[in-house]
Picture 1 (cartoon, rainbow, N blue to C red):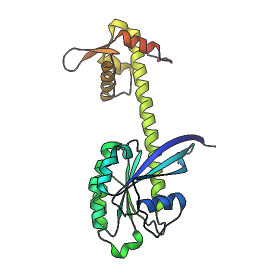
Picture 2 (cartoon, one colour):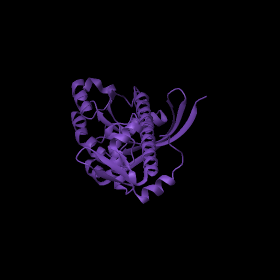
Picture 3 (cartoon, rainbow, N blue to C red):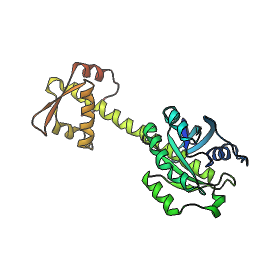
Picture 4 (tube, rainbow, N blue to C red):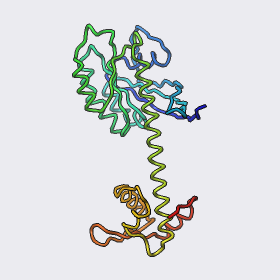
Length: 268
């Protein structure tokens, strides 16, 4: 039986007014479609719970909040800080029958990424049911998607085609990113603790660069240097340079206290 993890996530949709953002959300969350155009005033939040597998042994119970924004650009500029902040992913939407809605994403996406940071972006070309009124080519879509390293899909909120698949694919990506971040932080914490414990044992003698690599096998120079610089910036150690390429790291009293406060041990 897989272990269960819970995860709260935020997904923000973006794109010009009338491209079908609200209809896509309605189709995914409620499996409904409304023929009458639903003009979004301000922002709207919909919530859904998803079960997302991670490997063979973990199931993530995801509480997904989906944010829908009014498509007018002036409003977008007013609220973008609060709208995009904390988003784990972005879904950029255009209308297959409107060329301007595709190229407008060249402004929408960078504006969102400035606030959200390095999060996955998924591009949806909506209203596939209007393919006979198509206004741009597959190559146009591919070029824009590649510019933002974004997978893309052609969807129809009216028929439901590919809508669930697109949202689920992005949910899986959010889970993958979350576990990658968690694992990276665990590695960083582990290296940090090992360095502090080693230096605590060495006291005023410190450790030279070559001694670090003899003990911390498998750690790259870039990883070690980055962590040492972080610890020095926090006042936990001092780097004494002997020329441009060699150094000795010596723990500070503050670093000794931090090392003693940590549990666990490290075998040299």
